[in-house]
Length: 445
Image 1 (spheres, rainbow, N blue to C red):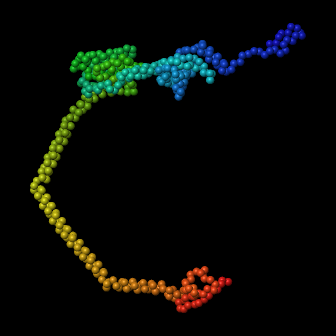
Image 2: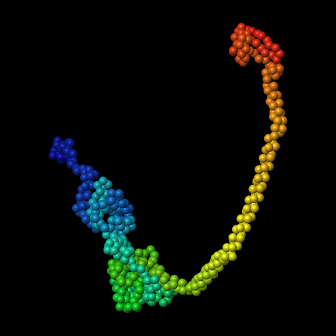
Image 3: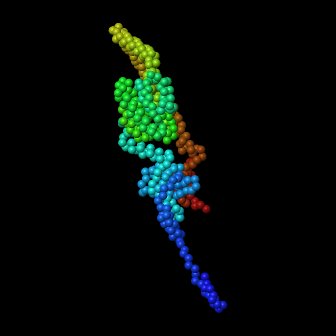
């Protein structure tokens, strides 16, 4: 701003100095914002839903945390220790702890994740995997400790809710396939808080009662309930239930939920059935198969008796046939037959030899007749006459008689065949059919 005038002749500063202002580069401004965020916000906890998850080959994971109104870029670096890293997925609800900062290359604020806690179904799944790994490491799932089930159990201990659908399914199948099977019910809750402790207590109670019941003890224990969500089935994923099954002196069958549902109890039990009905069919299979066997026993025994009788008759017939073949009269008859065969063969050979000799003699007689001179001379004379005619026809006299001539060198008598062999003045001799002609070669004009 120019200096104010004090008189009419004071015009102030005609050229005021430039105003002072601070200009920041993009990097400086971004760095200031980054320092401000890190100092004023710093470490925070934030919840939301994961989306756009990317797992890089470097091991870092990038994703966006969102809710209904906003979203936040997040990064989980490879070196950050967290047990839930592999459980992160799009749509997963999580609770994150991290540092709020600015990624300067894009001028974008983000959360550097330090800790992850899964929420909802994700938390249950994480707890399931953690307990599963722990118990597997202790050997609770080992195949070598699985015990075989009795083929035809007489009584079973049933651990389930007395009002659930599972007990109705089990009783319906048992009533249909083996009504004589005794059931000892150890009622308990199979869902909600405290259900796991009740299930474990029922298993232990059946073992204690069976130890003192003698012949009335259950042969095995069936732990079961119908289908439901992961939360509904969670009691069977508790460690207390797994250890009760592991410590049970009686074989344990687990049939929890539907075919696609797997619980920790399934892995520890001696046998896992897909459904309560399937478990009841497995437990009654031995008796059911035996019943089918007993019902079919009369028919089977009749078939076996007839088959044995047939074999005995065949053996008797074979023995009689062998005795017949070994009788002395049979052997003597075979000797007579052999002698007759030899005699007939000898006669056939003699007749054949006689016919062969007769043919040979006839052939020799024919050859002698054809070899007589009186038979061979006329053809030879005729052939000689034909050769004589051919030789006469091919002689030089016959060729000359047809108008041909032969030219010879007058001095040497050599037959000439090429005009290039003669020279001017050379004497020639030409032989005709009758007589000879002498001539001399003249040069060509």
